[in-house]
Length: 91
Image 1 (cartoon, helix red, strand yellow):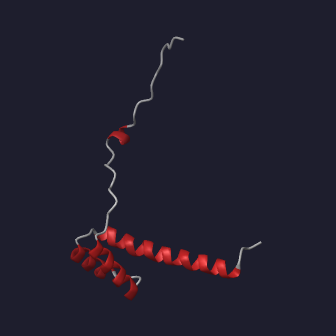
Image 2 (cartoon, one colour; image 1 turned 45 degrees about the vertical axis):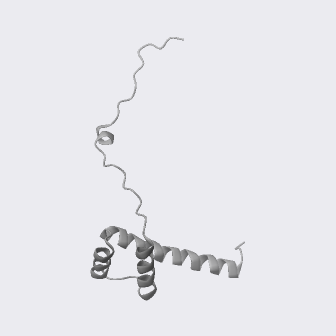
Image 3 (cartoon, helix red, strand yellow; image 1 turned 90 degrees about the vertical axis):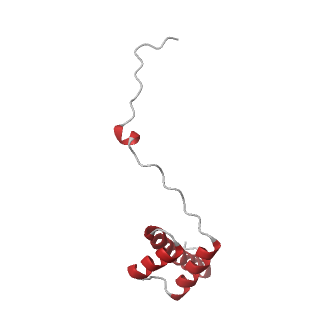
């Protein structure tokens, strides 16, 4: 079999100039304990508090903000699962 006039698709310019992927942040034990302790006191800290936490724990603001957002979402999901388990499956 012979391939004639085969044209390969060109890579888009946006693909070549894209930013490298961000690495997932791995929290240290101290950071985990601190974030969990703060979350128990307040599930939705102010932006100023998040800024102070990020500086103290040497994390990016966005990382700390995401931590609180995700933990709140996990709690909601857990509550929904518990309610569904208590009520039983909906038919």
